[in-house]
Image (cartoon, rainbow, N blue to C red; front, side, top):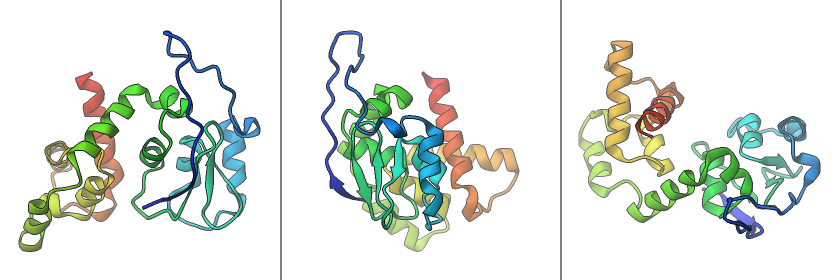
Length: 189
């Protein structure tokens, strides 16, 4: 879980076109390439610098502190399963970078997930007694992100199993399952 160390600027849409006219806080990191370059001394393996940079963060140079070039949000204490986009949206409400890249729908999904709460106790309890596919490391990682409902994750697992023809879900399939979830959502829209 991230620790928010400074709040972001509260950017409001300034007209009915949905355009934010405020300038980025750190204009020198406005390009993806500039943000990626800032990670030259990053020592952590997770999250990856390219994922952090894509989500708008540049490396602040100490520990694992990153800052959004647009809204100024600073985050630290990254966990292995933290998703930079999710954490940016969660802690940096109304950041224009998140809205421009992910769309306002992403914020709506985040709000819905937070209202639904974390994975249910029954799911965690079932995992203690079962080898159910929702109990795999990959599925639990996706559940811990709190961006997708359990049934959507199970559907993604079923598609993965059908595609690969295997029943055992390797630990390193989280990204593949996430890709299936994203593609499924795109098809629904």
